[in-house]
Amino acid sequence: MESNLPEPKSHATVVPWRTRDEFINVYEKLYSTKLEDKRWAIDTIHIWESRCHAGLPTAIEATYCLVRAVIQDTLFNENLTFMIEKDLVSMYAVGLIRFVNLRTEHLQNASFKLRISDLAEKIDIPQWIVNLRHTATHSSFPPLDHLRFGAVKALKYLEDNFWKTDAGHMKQLRNLRTNFEQEVLELFDQYKTVQFQWIQNHDPEMSSKFGKDLKEITKKMNYMTNTVLKRIEFISIITRLSVFTATEILKIIGDPNDPFLIEEEEITLPVKLEKFWLPLIRFIHRKGELIRFLVELLGKNGERHIFCQKFVIGLTRIIMFDSSTLAATKTFFSNNPLMTSSYSWSKIIYACAMGVNKYSMELAKQIAETKINDAHKYTELFVLMAMKTGHFIPPEIKQMNAEQAFSKQLKDVKDGIVFTLEDTLNDVEELKAKNKGLNSLKNSIRLYTGPLDFSQIPIGTVLNPIVPKEDQNKEDISLVEIRPSPQDQCIFGGESSSSEEDMEFTEDDEWENFVIPEDFDIVYRK
Image (cartoon, rainbow, N blue to C red):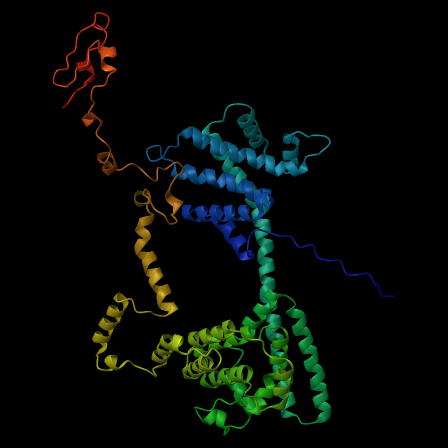
């Protein structure tokens, strides 16, 4: 008898790292010998901590405290920072205290407190590390050498008992992703096989069998793409260059004299080719991923064989412009219209530019003119696409030789002419390479509103020292002019006069040996 009980739900755990690869990368860099790797890992863990607040795994927090101490020990220099050796000792001590406390607190009994040394013994933490923790907590800090050695052993313990185990598990899960790709490709091959047989066989009974097989394949696809992330990955896999091939197109069409194959400008899909892919298009549309599917195809179209380029453009026109001559396709999209927006059309145009060829260039123009109704704002993009495909060369460039054209390009850059996104990214990378020298310790001690590279800067470094020019701008106190006031006669026993020229001082016996104005550099000026 079958049980009607629901299947138990898997208990998902929310983690602060975005991907398994990020977790593995942090582990590898924490235990790297390069200082910049350790700093990157520490900064990343700090981001994890901000995401999950108090939910950061205790082993990660303990590693964070200890590695920070190691980094500061490496950079420690009393002449360059406000740190002294006692500060370094304090960081190591806190790291070891946190290590022991965090690793033993989950074993503690709420009703009956157990000794930390007993708990540490259960999880194989060496007793001498517990003693270091006890001394640092209840007495003076242990010597720096002892703390350094304790930190090394504690980090080794954390690597063996947490990082290696969890990273190994992450790698196994990452291999499952490869298995998913393999399953998708195998299922896609099954789809192609069934469709090939269906197109070539006209027996009604066999067609019914192929229909059942196709339904089963679609059912499996639906199960494999039950989440957004899986659908995105599914689309990415089936749009690879190796999936849509010219050989398959020739095999599907069957007729080597078909206009689609022999006429360069013909992009209308043959009926057989449309029928072959229609079930897949229906499935992707029902999943709500048809725009993503087209964007992925068009973005990679510049690297495809010309037959594949024409196929992708023809398929896009059928979907976006309802240009199909097949009744089944028209009926499907009539009952299930594609919901598009100006943003969707812009994405299609961008994909055409990324995988530019002469067919995608015409498609982009058609979309801009008929769907967005504003081809003018894409003029520069169309010119760049035409130049990349060799269909347009500015008249002034035609008369130039190679050296002159290159000089013209340099002038255009200086004049601020807009280039492609790819050109901009290359420029950014060049600027980063040129400015690497600014990340040194000497140049980092300055006012700067952007992010700094702290990988070589110890804690306590003065990032804003007073420069000599600032001292020069300060007011010179020696030039302050002090004028007489009515209170002067009270201090010095003098009587004020109506004018500064007639003012005289009379000595008072009480003040004679107590204050002399000249000793205080008090100067009266007119």
